[in-house]
Length: 198
Image (cartoon, rainbow, N blue to C red):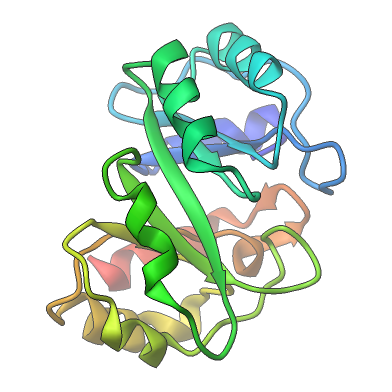
């Protein structure tokens, strides 16, 4: 999210999380004031290999309730972050293309609240492309995760199928496929998506 009026429009649809990207190289980089959001929506900061002191400062300034780590952040980094921000949810992102070694997740199991699986692309997220969800068939853990990466209206049936599987899918993360420009969400399309997905 990037634009005040659009933030309020999306917030009116009562998503569980609303993401704000704090990464200067992103077209969606957020700078400004987050308007007051309805209760129940978790303000989520998205960071990429940020200095921990800067991340903590921004989390406190914006009163973030969840942090999405989209870089190569180590387990020790996450532990330090949790010490600074003990009440904040930590979501660690891993990018998938055609295959994935789930063993790399093991060290993070005890220190993050959720994983998020996104598509490996040129950008750190927001690429608008989808990885092969069949890769998740071999996900071996009970740790819940968000499904992300190029999800659009055309994926409603696929999403219903995968969320009815035994996989511990916690949430669906939508972004670029619902934008008219970077950071500006198409409200009618999100309404339509929500109506069909619930």
